[in-house]
Length: 149
Image (cartoon, rainbow, N blue to C red):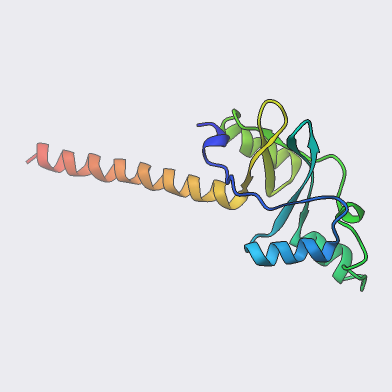
């Protein structure tokens, strides 16, 4: 299964010049833990960074800084990891593990933002798959009980 099939396509986005306070308000308004920072390139929204609720706490609140005067670009880390929408689920999990990230923007072949995949999404998918496997075991036992009477 391609990651593009399960990623969340409703992504909260922001621009580098917006304030950290704006980003925090977006997260609160949309009940999410991150905003994907994008820039427009040839009519496409291309992800260039990500700011998380943890970034806001660790980089701004804990240091007593003013989130209304600092921009997203001030705290955004360089080197955003993204994943192509055609990449398989297990390859995505491995890539996220190697990169040490819990959230990853999903992009089209042309680099445009398609969605975002999170650790929570992947855990929910895997839990569903494990449930289906356990159903297979239950069905097998029921079939054997009927056939061995």
